Amino acid sequence: MRPKKIVEEWIRLFNAADAEALSLLYHEDAVNHQVAQEAVVGRESILRMFSHEFAQAKMLCIPENLFEDGDWAILEWKDPLGLRGCGFFQVKAHKIKFQRGYWDKLSFLRMHKLPIPKE
View 1 (cartoon, one colour):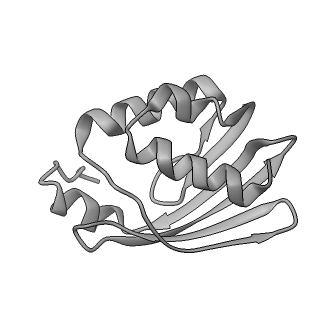
View 2: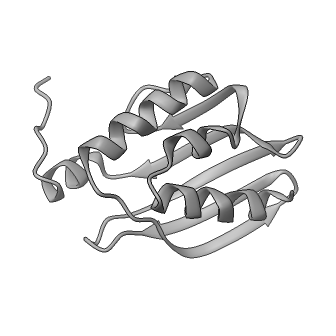
């Protein structure tokens, strides 16, 4: 599958809050780095991250733009509450090898009425 198709499937599974199936889109040693937090390394850790996040808040990814360049897919997204962000997905051998996401964590926490961590 091409990177764009993988990310289209990623969006579908993310919106279904299916952490298990979503994690299977990643390589065993994949890295998911949302710049608002520490990088998550490995499929099992990525599964735990998504499971935890889906338990915290109802999230919906509405794609605005989806581009492909070589082994990269670039997703610009929004959610129904007005949060916006973008994600970069490197795909190798039909699996996500590396993902980096940019979004405003403070806005997300406030929108979902989640606790804001103290420094």
